[in-house]
Image 1 (cartoon, rainbow over the protein chains, first blue to last red):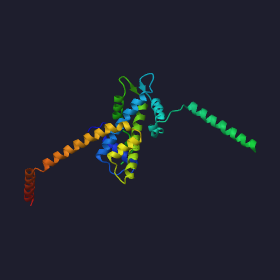
Image 2: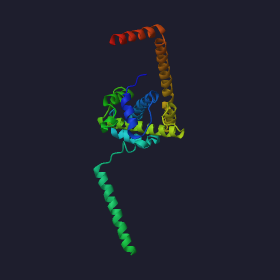
Image 3: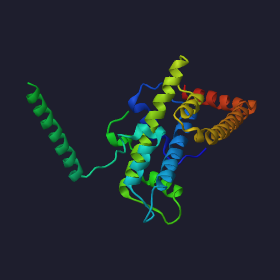
Image 4: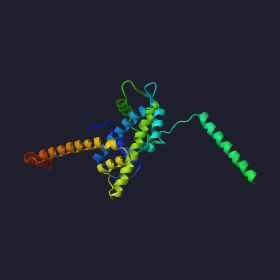
Length: 109
Length: 128
């Protein structure tokens, strides 16, 4: 049974984070095949978000990940990007809110 | 074990090839998107391992079984993977069984065993 991804690398990743017991050849094969299918499913479905130049970009992936319930585990891995300009706006909004809060407090005193 | 963090990355060339296969003809993928898919795939392995381990523990098993993985995939809403994986598993089991049977028949040929043993005896005698 052939796989495209290297079995040894998949085994290393499996062992990296958990005290997984022994990994049988069967389990390793299924894990590797699942990962290959996962890569292709993610690619195909995220490509559905592409509109103009036939190029799958980061933003298509992050849009797709945001929307799919079974990809919740990827939200922090493929986060939506935000422009510095917009981030500053959010910060300013935060400042306005906090300053108005303190005003309220003063008035209530 | 894991010595460098790069050891958790999947090889770029292979991931790139899998992506290309999944895209329609003439479509492209940006470098950044390809890197994100590779990262997502590594996390998927950890995620599926952890879910399968939890299922195994529930049955008081320390070792994950193939059934644990298939059940975990259902639980995580990747049901579409289950059927193709089940047939992969069947093929794999058949092939390994055939290999084993073959090994048994060649090993148990008495003539081969006997002559092998004699050779060893002779070697031992020479040595003494």
